[in-house]
Image (cartoon, rainbow, N blue to C red; front, side, top):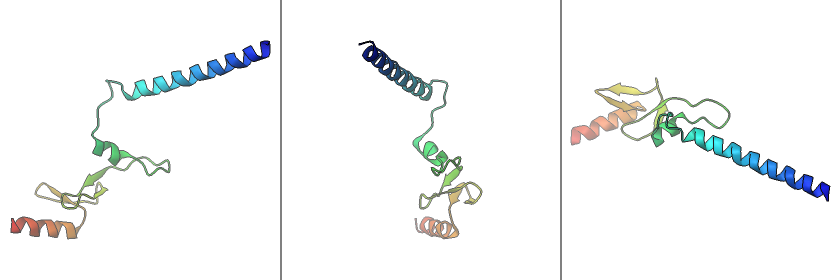
Amino acid sequence: MNGIRLILLAVAVAIAWRLFKNWRARRAVDSPDRPKQTRDQRRDRQGTGSGQKGIDTIRCDHCGTHVPVGRELRAHGRTWCSRECRDADREKSDRD
């Protein structure tokens, strides 16, 4: 009988510990001191899943593709992922 009580106590302690860890993790994520990020900012900072840190990216104004910062083309407050998108965007704005 004492063995069963010991096993039940161990299971109860393990469950309580797991609940406590989950509560602390959720509390840290929802902290008011943590700055809020938009969905695009969170997605842009996500890693590749291989343990690498996220790469800062920027969105192309023409096609919406995200490219690494430093590889984009910029002019007149606009950003493009490639020369093709830049030229297509300029042609579109010339028609409008």
